[in-house]
Length: 154
Image (cartoon, rainbow, N blue to C red; front, side, top):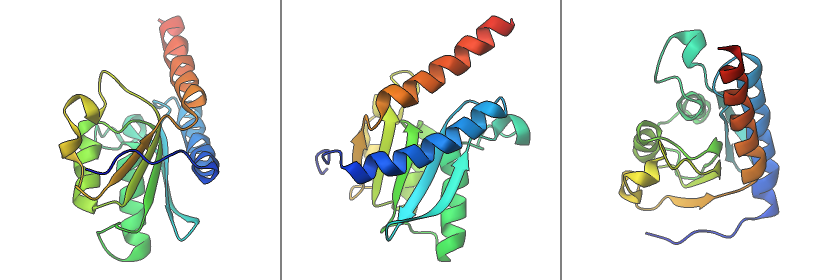
């Protein structure tokens, strides 16, 4: 499996786009995770969590973005694409990303409890490159603020 790729300024730029999606989720009272998929240096798909709105446990940001990207390119394989997502993908999303053969995944905050890494990197396609921790403080702070708000409403 290839090693981690150094963080590039472009990664921060695209992660800010994913953070905008996460902010939309936050405003809609969804867990604030956002995603964008980039190909040829432009966003071809966007998504944020819609699990509450759609009453669908599979409506994660990554799943929304994968579906939109496949529709955009007219095929199911995303080999030449990069997913930017504000939180490390869960096991379900990692499996979907493996099937899509996504070329690269860049995530913000690590998720020690529910992230795919707790099961292992073999969940991903062997050619998928991964970079974690891009704009991690901003991504993690949004999640913390959301759950702080939820606890205060109880």
